Structure formats: structure tokens, C-alpha cells
Length: 161
Length: 161
Length: 161
Image 1: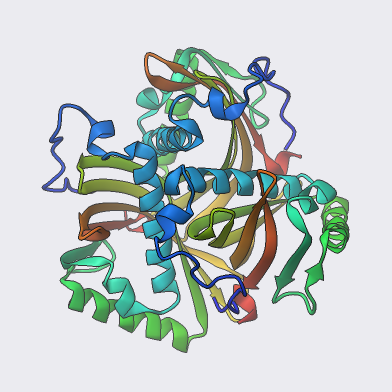
Image 2: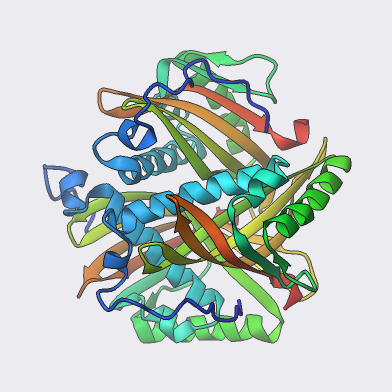
């Protein structure tokens, strides 16, 4: 997957990822991030587009090689997700976004670059599930007021080269 | 996924999930639960129906929207799994149950509600793997004598609406 | 999945896995291993065959029921991966290896047996993703100079019985 470098991804601490991961170490960070994604994806798959958009920073960006332009800001991200979820609901299709193969690069105690793989599975009512998309995802997450938020998401769908 | 609320899911401790997760924190709980599911699913996929049923509480329940009635108690759960595993073995089909996107809600130090996604992959001998089912899973896990057990499992297959 | 026993898998410490997992406990080990696999698979999927081979021990072994003979040693492992990645690149196919359902059995502080499931997803340019293979994987990992390396990998593709 080719994803342009995030602006905030220069290593910031010579003590390295373990220290940057915070007092809980890599394990605590891993658990928090996995929990974050599980809840985030469930919101989208349950059609809760606005609550899903709340997991992005107010000034967050969602860019994908499947879209001509990135969505910028929570309101735009929510509106885009709302259109998609309403469309799938109208067609009777249940979606599930699986994120896996997480690789974490902490930048400081409140910023982490997460590279991952994602599968999108669609199941029509009374039909067979279909693996619709295989993608790579690069997220810059920030912790604000104790909550992780997506500051910048870049999705690369494999079929689009 | 629509899963009726579990009876024991009322938040029980105002100190919140971190404290309820026990001395090891969220990370230790996450690792234990992931390990539990990896071993549990492998038992089923290896055809060890009775050993798999031992990962349920003696009074455990297995309910699924694909079955008209829940299985209640280890013996019934084991018998149901035995019939299914024997049938797949007779047809030369290898199954793998993937669980992912785990979201943990600790209720107390010995009880945790786990919501997850599951894929069922079937591979016939000399054939191509097929994604047979996409599902949501809600488990109420209890720790008894140091071991995690499923007290109540609810499976929602996406194609069944 | 049937995998012949690894020679070094006899339980070595009566204090059990928690102690053998090292000072960080199971959680820290789990996070390290997940991170290891995420990076390892990404190298292969990005076509970095030689860098991927560096994640094996110098004397590492890669055996699979899809190959008549195991690859032994980093150079042979790299050469095999190079041929495969070049072939997929020439055909315009993007691969992703998903590893999941990790079950860890620490042998000592520097050796762990990891059993897992793996999916291989292939996406042709402008085409639909295909679940090409469902497999079981058993890895004997060793920590040398602070880095995890694969000493012995055994892959069992489900369609090959």
C-alpha cells in the first residue's frame, strides 16, 4: 500500500516507542487502540453515522483513493457516512468492517500512527456474505481529553492500484 | 446487530472499566480474552466438540438466530457441536471460526461482556475457501477458578436480518 | 490442523506461562507478537521479500504442506519469497496475509510457540478481492538481541487435507 507520509510522523523521542507509549507500555496502548477500533467500526456498521463521526477529531480528515476528494471536518465526515449507511440500509445489506494487522508507531504520549489492514464484508438479507473490499489503512490518532480520535485517515483500496 | 441486553450488564462499579478489569488493567484482560477465544475456536475447528463445550459454564447458554431454540447446559451444547462437527468431517470440509473486533465491557473483576464479529470460513478438500457466514457475537464471560467460561453466548448471523 | 510437534515445545517451567512470558506478563508478550506479525506480513505484502526474510532466524525454517520441501535458512527463504512476490507483481495482484486467532505458549522468556490462523486475500487491479487460502500456522519464535525472529514456521493449507 502506498500512503503519503503523515506530516506528524517524524520520530519525536529518541527514547523510542516504549517510552512514547506512555506509562502502560505497548500492551496498554495496544489494548486501548484495539478497543477504540472495535467500537468505532461497530458504530459505522450499526448505521450510527453521526456517533461514528464523533470518533474523528473536530478537524479530522478522511481520505480514500476511492473518493475524488477527502472529507474534512466532522460534519462532512458524518454527512458522507450518513449517505452511505442509508443507502446500504435501503438495499438490505449488512456491512462489517474488520480491521486487523495493527502496527503502532507512537509519536508521543498522545499521538500514534496506526497502520492496518481492513476487510469490508457485505451480507444481503437471505444471501451469502461477500468480501467486497480489501484495503490498507493509515490513521494518525490523537488522545484528547482522555479519548482517542482520528486526526487523519487514509484508506487505500487494493483494486484501485 | 441486535442482541437483547444481557441481564448482568448493568454497570456495577462507578470506578469504571479500568478498575473493574482487575489488577492487570485493560491490557491483561484483553490478552487473556484473546487467548481464550483463540483456544476455544481452535477446539471447535479441530472437531473437539466436548472439549469445546467445556469452555462454557456448566449452566451456560448458546443462542443463535440460526437456531429455533437455545442450547442450555454443557451437555446440550456439546451434543449440538458434535453433530455439526461430525457432519462437516463426513463431508470433508475444514472450518475456521475467526473472531475479531473485540469490544470489552468489564462488569466486575470476574465478569465481562464481550461484543465481537465472527467469520466462518469453510474449505472443502481440494477446493476454494468460502466465507460462509458473517456474524455478530455477544458473550457474557465469567472467571471461575481462574478460568474464563462462556455463561451466555448470542450469535446473530447477518443474512438472517 | 495437524502440525508435527516442535522439538522445543516441552513445557520447561512449572511456574507456568505467566512467569515464562517475562516481566511484562502475557499482555506485553501479546502486544509484541501482534506487532511483530503486523510488520512481518506487511513486508511480504509490500513485496519486500529480503526484508521479510530478515524476520526469520539465520537458521530459520519455512515448511508448508503446499511445498514439496521446506526452505531452510534466510537466503533460501528470501529467494522463494522473491520469486513469488515478483510473480504476483507481474500479474498485477495485491496480496494481503491476515494472521489472527493467536494462541501463545511461552517456553521460556525468549521462546514462544504461536499457533494462529491465516487468510490470504488476493485483489487484482480493477477486480474483486478473493479469499485465496485459509491456513493454520505454527511458529516457533525466538527473541535474539531484543528482536523476535521465526525459528521454525509450519503452514497447513486447509484445502490440501
